[in-house]
Amino acid sequence: MAAAARPVDVALPFPFSCCSSTSLLLSHSRGRSLPPAVGCSRLASPRSSMRRQLLLGVGAPAVAALAASAPPAVLRDGAATLLITGGAYSLVRAFDALTERRLIEQNLSRKIVHVLSGVLFMSSWPLFSNSPGARFFAAIVPLLNCIRLLTYGLRLSTDEALVKSVTREGKPEELLRGPLYYVIVLLVSVLVFWRESPIGIISLSMMSGGDGFADIVGRRFGSMKLPFNKKKSWIGSISMFISGYLLSALMLFYFSCLGYFNVCWELALGKLALAALAATVVECIPVTDVVDDNISVPLATMLAAFLLFGFSACC
Image (cartoon, rainbow, N blue to C red; front, top):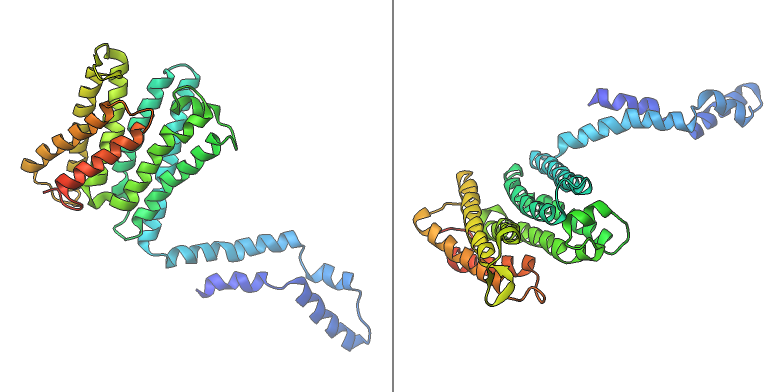
């Protein structure tokens, strides 16, 4: 501690203290005062030099002391937040570049980002500590994405590559609908359910994996439409049920292996099928013009999972 404080003592002689003390001594000894310019120019360093000394002498030890005094959980959660934020930004940028170069079509890019964003975000939750505040650090990631979507959706700034990669028609105002609802559901799932509850995990699995694969498969092979909704196909709905079910089971296995909750698989698999069926039915009904899938699907899944699993245990 003494070694860290020593540079502070060296860097603190401000021009006022130097000039005033030196001038007083000289004036008493010689009976006259020195011009302020002479006394200060020799004894006081320029302001820019002083700032550099303060940054080197005070800033580094202060940051080091702050890091040393911070709880390990805060450091771990902060590092995880930075890592995941950078990864989420890089993921979207990578598909922005692929869309711009016409290496991947816009709709496929949008749905791949839709699938990967939720899956990778969930998979990163174990990186955070077990402290009560860890979920708030994790919530920073979707919160920043909310701000980003609002900024570009309201045309406060422009990002054509982002708009093309995550919207259907390439219009900025589309960012305020499906993409914004998506990250809001991520935010709610973190703050309300977190990793100790299967409800958020299942709902995000159905929203990202189930709904995402339903669109990808349905657009390519969905020639047979549903009789009550011509915008949806049989193969798309079947794909949603299967992919959402499998992804939910995989994520429950992942978090149960890490000890966040226990799964009684004899009962859980049947309950998962019912939750996936509820989400698939809600996705099929023709209410897309009224309620976006990124709202209706996770809400229906949350309700079904809550009734089937409860809040904090799978059985």
